[in-house]
Image (tube, rainbow, N blue to C red; front, side):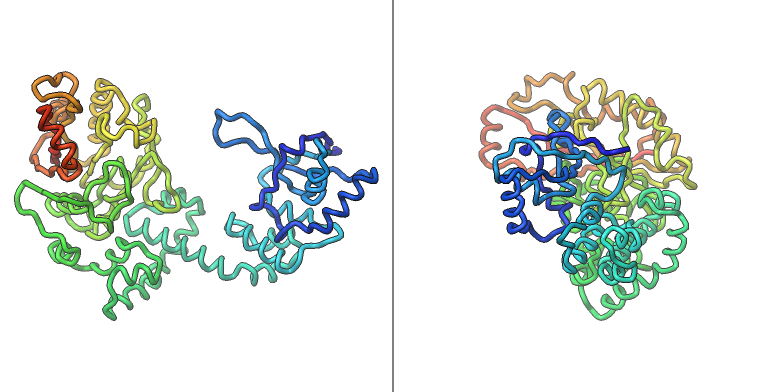
Length: 476
């Protein structure tokens, strides 16, 4: 079937450099086209791809050039309003390679342009084979292999590290394969390589290099290097190496988050807090479940403390946080599609640090439970705690981290409405109702330093009582 030619406004077309295979526009060619246009010549229609704005509220359609950049530029320069074009549907084909394949006119791609196109295509989609790239740019598979050899080595290393990290955290092979979107047989082939992958890291550690130095040299995260540096060490030795003092009493006071562990995230908790939960309520190689992982503090700390960890979060970050599997705890769902369902083994410890009610709701996704009404928030927790029992063993411990929530903003303490708040006793009532037994309440207060002197003075004047309380409730 012959492609349909339509007239498209020149202003609706853009030259997208990310899919343009040439280094730049040849202005001499453009000038020739301009002269031909003025002399009344007609040209073959250009080829474009229809695109839409990622914001669904903006419904404007625009087009990017696949073939005919010089003709389009000539039309634009001579003030033409419309240009004959064919709108191509690529059906999954790589647009850069398609554009490169069309560059077969009087001026072929140069060797530099061909090489750069091959490299850009592979960087955009590492799943492309050398043969696929070669067919598009008119080069042999062997030539493409030479073009992208260093990129392929880097990509394989990145995949190695992802598999290594997920395997270290005890994630089953079938879930690793699904998460990384590769065949499970690939995982089986990679796992025997894992000791060799850590060999160079351990070699540098044995030579006296620091963990940050080794992490930077090998492009590993610090928690991954700590997992190797502390291998075979007991928990007390790990605490000492990490410069964390062990809090012996039920008051865990940490002023700051350890920046080595976890991403910058709303409501980020200190890794020291997670480490203390692991120290007192789990043992090495235990399986920890983090159902609302946020910035990944729990997974990072488990790596350093020698625990396995399964993590879920609604924010999907496959490149930076492949160990955190995407999942949205929708109040209306039955949660039968949970990624961990069907996996062998149940958690020994669940660490739950949910988005707090109302607090920082504007910083979380619109789907976060933080934005629920008070009634719906408590309803969610009741259903959630019941579900956690289903996926737990008889002796599984639950560490629930939360604080009193009171609407104290601009409100004197004696005028607060008690029915508007959610206190620790409210969580306790839900735990009793859902069959969890409370064994410990540990104080882990928030830092009061987040209130500056001006704010404190204003609060004192209005008799406003702020909240720095935070608790770790341990249940079984």
